[in-house]
Length: 397
Image (cartoon, rainbow, N blue to C red; front, side):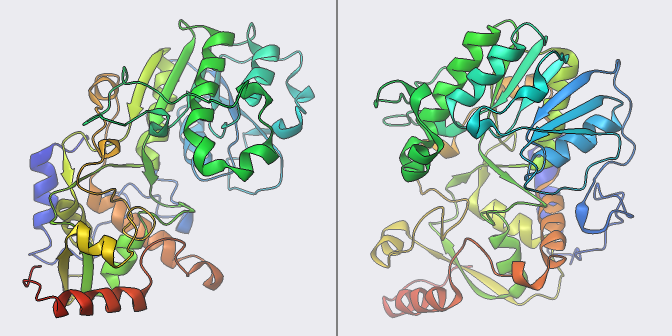
């Protein structure tokens, strides 16, 4: 069920009544009670109208396993292509073939055909070209996972599918190698994804290409911790530094919502360009933090201290990497329109479910994975809060 604004507020208001983490039964939270920390999240999946032969490029990272498990549960025949250097818990029915797109090693695709190709990990345009050369007449649909980072947000207040995109200014994007990209990945990520979109359209055409542009993908299995920081930090309790005044918009999408939707797009043969983020209604930073709080134990002693963006800048507290999920008060990237995606069947599970599942997954990880990879260092947080109090800050929570 897609949570509308009323549903979201009902969920967040549960904090006052002490909704405990773990109080919801696994099936009610979208978890397979037998799957432990893998979070298959696949209770009561109905079969698809028809079975498809699906090729998933990637499949062992963060997003792919969720997509593959859902596709198999829907009755599809799934093949994955990856380098074989990462492991993931995939259903035994999945055929796994090996190939390295970095070195154009795709012989395993020769002479084969699939109904749909789901391209999850591509950043470099020549990866799309190489697949296109082999499969352009051997598949009915090519679904490319892009990013909201393709947009040129300069001067924009919000972004929709027709907003201007970034362009690579360094020559032929097909000539960018993995090494060259790694040396400038921060600058090239958006332009390379945009060029990859163009390559997909070149090989498969508008009538067979689906482009999904996600924002921040979150949930169990996230390797960046850009959302995970908040459930972990809030669960620790105490005085919590929160950015801005609470009214700035933020956008995130649960990996399961996004990946399950891509499978349904394939089932329906839906083509076109879609922004793939959420939720459906505007989510403010305050609503996000209190929504996460709603998923945690009711006896937490904590308080959110809202610190204005200019003061955070003075204290060298960085948006996005330290104040995760937050880009600041005027960021168009946090105002992506998702009307077309919702019309095409994108749904959203409640934020409290995402937060609870993410925290449970994180706590089940090995000890060496318990150090957050993003977010504000506790000592720096205490130092900035002390400076804010010293500046005569108002008490807010």
